[in-house]
Amino acid sequence: MPRGPRVSTVLRTASLTDLHRAIAARRRAEEKKLTALRRRRRTVEGALAALDAQIADVESRLKGAGAGRRATRGRPRMVKRPRTGRRGHKDLALEVLRDAKRPLHQRDIAKILKDKKGVKSKSKAFDRSLGLMLSQDKRFKRVKRATYTLR
Image: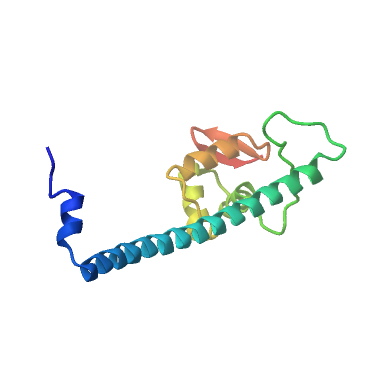
């Protein structure tokens, strides 16, 4: 079942100028599509160039790190870096307890660290994390539950 007039009927009834206009309109639409595709190609080529640069960077680091070392399975080993002037939470907690001259609860130590020593933490349970750190450090002694003093 045909949807519209047959092509041969349209060609017989259309004037030459109508056909030229239709051809020009189709050509403009195709040129517009071609321009959009070329623009998209430039974008993709840019992203591809960035990926190539990242791949080359990672490959160069792998080649440099692999010289004379044993290959690790999947993950590179962690390397301890020397501290650069910043004091850790445990060192600051040591100062807090020295200044207090009495045992303090881990919540109080964490509050003083945040308020007075300028420690910033995104942890919702910073005081509990600090308590875990203090319990594992030999410089601190647990006197009660979550309460620490200096040895």
